[in-house]
Each structure stands twice: as C-alpha cells, then as structure tokens.
Length: 168
Image (cartoon, rainbow, N blue to C red; front, side, top):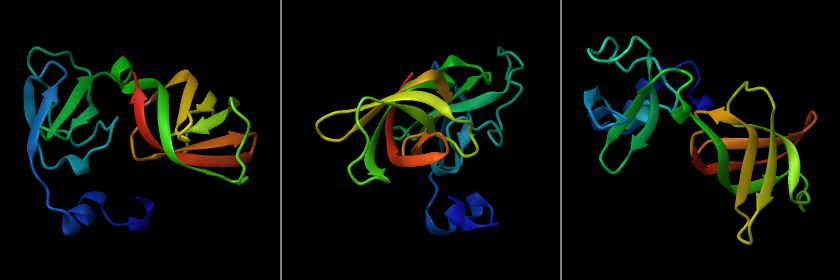
C-alpha cells in the first residue's frame, strides 16, 4: 500500500480497521504465540512475529507462510528457503493488457510478483473465463493473493492481473 506514504503501515491500518488478535501456529498446529491482527502481516514476513528462540525448534528464523482467515490464525514455518514459501503456478484475475486485444496464448514472457524483483521467465495461458494461469520456470517466493503479477516482453510492459491463488 504505497499510497500511505511515510506513515507506519500498522498505525495507518489500525486507524481505519479494527484488529482481532489470534493464534500464531506452526505448520503442525502448535501454538507459538499470539498475533495482533492478520492484516498486519504479509506472506514471507520475518520481522515482528515475536516467536524466536522456541524450545524444541532450531535457531532458524520464522516466516509467515499462510493466513487462516476462517480461524484467524497466522501460520508460520522456519527457514528462508523453506519450500512452503515458494510457488511455481499462480492463477490471476482482473487482467488488464496494454494492447486492448491482448497477446496470443500461450505467451512466453517475463513477470514480476514483488516490488523490485528481477524478471522471472514464465508461460501464461488462459481459460474461457479469462482467468490466467502463470507457470514460472523457477519457484517464486511468498506469492500473495490480492497483489499484482505484471508481465513484460523485454523492457515493454504487456499488462498485469490480480493474483487469485497459488500452488505450492
């Protein structure tokens, strides 16, 4: 949410949205701590979890790997290279192409799913409803539904779409 400017993200959100605390859980459901509201966390986040140094676990840092909205739980796993942080396939909706007629499919191009990310090779196809399926050559870290995937051919932006879901 780049429009909030130089303000702290958590302070901005708490002004407009009521927070609901809940559980921080390991992948196997073990209670590790409590969060102050799911909206304050992003997939792949490491800082601010307050659950380091747990007995029975290794020294690797914890990362947010999922949000269980139904149970208001934040799901975490250890290790920056943990496979659960990565996905190779995503689906995307609300497609907007720079060229109104759009590209020919299947499309081989580059894409980005995170700010300042290097270009990532992918293959893009679509179904009859216009939903895109994006298959990356290399798994992508912390793909987040609701954020954008943007497509490029060289330095030329082809368009973008909203990430709907991902497969690990």
